[in-house]
Length: 149
Image (cartoon, rainbow, N blue to C red):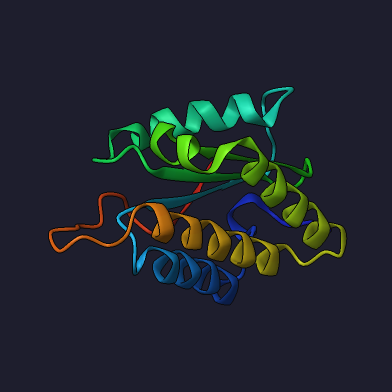
């Protein structure tokens, strides 16, 4: 994996690709996808950090409780995927496990951005299936990447 200063975890082109994937995933759904990236995870378990980030970003406040957070601590080689109650009840634990395996496969080949794009695409497809776009839908959460410490 590349080593880089915190503020340069992704190039501008990589950032644009990830944000475009989020926008595409959300295009036909009322669901929300957020990406949170930091260099190091301050918790033993990245899932605990993801829960903290999820709450900090107000992701549990979506209308249908269908927000999904993809959390990455790149230098620690850790990640977690956290779906809110609404989407988790629809897809179940096997879906998140499958997405984690997908990310692990891409990351093992040092295809970080490509793995994130593919995961976002698949999450978006599930969101679209269970939470299709509604006429009065609004983008409840920003599409940008959030960079942590």
